Image (cartoon, helix red, strand yellow):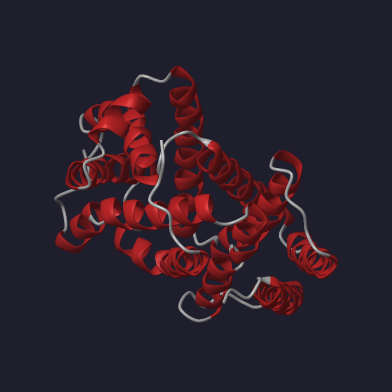
Length: 304
């Protein structure tokens, strides 16, 4: 099953765009702050599925979708990836709703290290000497931040590990970005519908419909999920996983800044140390990538 090939530059733009959306996600989640996390995740799943199916129909991916649904190996991988992203969604929404913005930010600071380690171990990717220096410096920054947040470290570790596993599975599965997300949504949809049917008979019932802005936020869970995940999956399949991993520092930095400004959380010395170390590391990593790209272009043979 093949994807439409894209250039490295476009894949990089998609990855950065994804992180801009994910970084701003805490502001959007304020619309659904009083919705129980599990109910929101259930609605998010159900509103994502029709978006994926419409795109699959429009792009004529019916054959790919049927082939994926009948492949036992592919389906087992997508069941695993659907489980990983469901855990990630739930813990992230819970963290934002309960004002643990820095814990969420730390989780996505840990994530790049997890992804780069997975790229090295499972995909045989390599880091240059300067990229290794950058990763080591970023790891020191994350360690400083983790040392100041031990009580919520479980939140951060769950977020980092669950999305790292999700990204690795989506990079290696024999299904394109759109088809993979559609099938993941199909896998989770019966569980989501069953939970909502049960929750609707309990207590005050379901949150949807009780307030206009809140309902709008719930419905927007579909596009807010589908669009960045499709962008991420497309970029992940076109770029080395170590590069994708390092780009992950963008969204938690946006979340970190929002924690300082929009959410008014206190900046602690460990958090400042982490911020400075990671952005020095990001500068080194980016410089080395650009240097390598220039060398690769210069090494190309000149054709008459």
